[in-house]
Length: 132
Image (tube, rainbow, N blue to C red; front, side, top):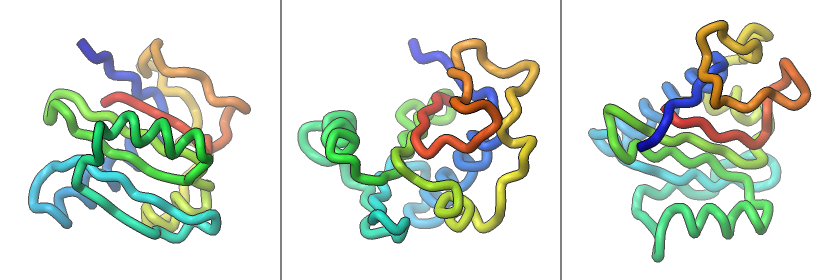
């Protein structure tokens, strides 16, 4: 059984963006993979699962160092996975339509104990994963 791991406000902000994008473009809550180039421009957005699986494709992208954002409401509304790799803060803020605040990177008092600490503390992580 999955375990929720959110502990920071920045996670929720990216999750809201991803869920809204999925709903706007598909009329529902569907998984998607957004591929970006090195400058942070979106180069593709797909809602179709690649063969053999999303997770295998993500492993390949990560190994190749390809910037991406992945949203997977695999058991919505109970659980969803969100991750990104090599997405700079200014790029994520552009996607979200506004800046993060310093408080977004402070662990919530009631945040999941399963959530990893930010390294370095208080700084946006260019690579991250969280289960909602």
